[in-house]
Image (cartoon, rainbow, N blue to C red; front, side, top):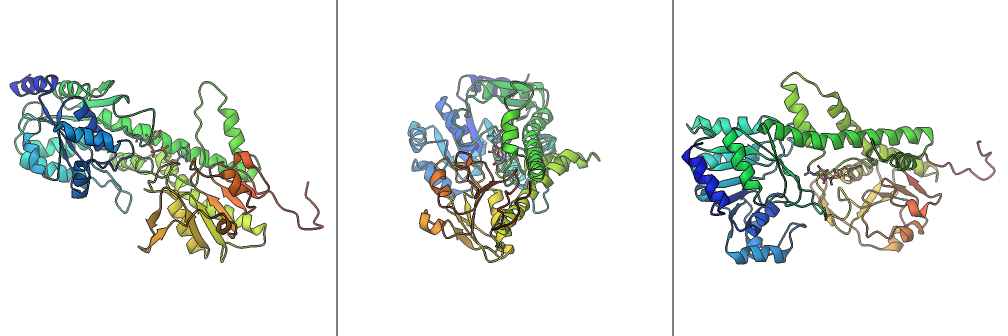
Length: 453
Ligand code: SAJ
């Protein structure tokens, strides 16, 4: 191991190393805070000047970091948020936590990563450790970072050190946080891995070394593709049970009593968030480069993307029981966030359900106490209506999209308005006018109509 390695290892172990985090979002800010808490000086770089100002004011914009915690970090004098990338010149070890979205045609958009690499080319401190945390396809670390830096004459493992360590932040998870969630890490060389392990073990309880960045990149994609495929499978089971007149929710709860070899997933109106809908597409895109076509990933994506259409069609079946059509009906969506008790709307299936109801001629509103507004496909701002039970009772049908804990399900059920429940959230208030995905619509016989056996 060379002098740069020894110098950096010593700086890390003595906590004299200046650490850096690029991207102060739901991954980067908690990471930076944890580093400061462990006694390091941390430079936090983000393009958004508003974020930097809010951090200096001790105003947290991340649910998992309290403003008090943030203010305390600033008060140490060791947390230095900035928009200035030239600060990379004083950083000994930098973690890159920038977004990896999809492009319009569902291909990986790694432009945020390459923008950071462009800055590293200009300012990187010789002998620095670079760790990419953004979820991405296997090969990204070597192709987009190692290749680019070596083109400048730097040698990885000597002039700079390079690792991949996938983020595992689960926003608003009260049990698992940056410190107590095991962290996988793969190094480009043995020296890189040793430095990465030495760094991350300063502020993460369990570090899991693997043999390469590709293994680390792939492990994260396996984690999230596993979820996408299993959610899609249970969504298909829901549509199958609907057709067969079996209650899929009861079926899942029964299967979940098996103490081994089974893990319950639950149907929904589709999948949202910044991970599950996107990560598998990074993997299938890269695999195609090897002429490997992942049927599971594509099938899961299409099954999950189909759920908003299933929700509309089921609503039409329900309205039909009341001799109504979707067209001209007043529809209220309950919840819009992609999962309960948060305001995050990214990729929320509720947005697609909203647009489909509009396209089918319904007058559609939504109520969500967390996600209070969004931009629709026409670029107009749509705002949540107020919580008003008398207004709720004037809708032709309500569709429960997000099972927020604070909803008063009993009171809403008692309004008597037909409800399509996509989360089995009304399970304690079963009534004939409460319907759910994954179960057939109970036919209401007309007066005098023979009731079919
Ligand atoms: N969903 C279902 N049925 C399920 C589970 C989820 O329809 O059984 C839907 C949710 O409603 C949501 C979407 O899928 O719209 C994604 O839900 P998620 O529970 O996977 O939550 P995320 O998107 O916040 O995923 C994150 C991921 N964390 C990271 O990538 C670091 C994921 O790996 C975690 O497993 C997940 O949190 C978690 O377990 O909470």
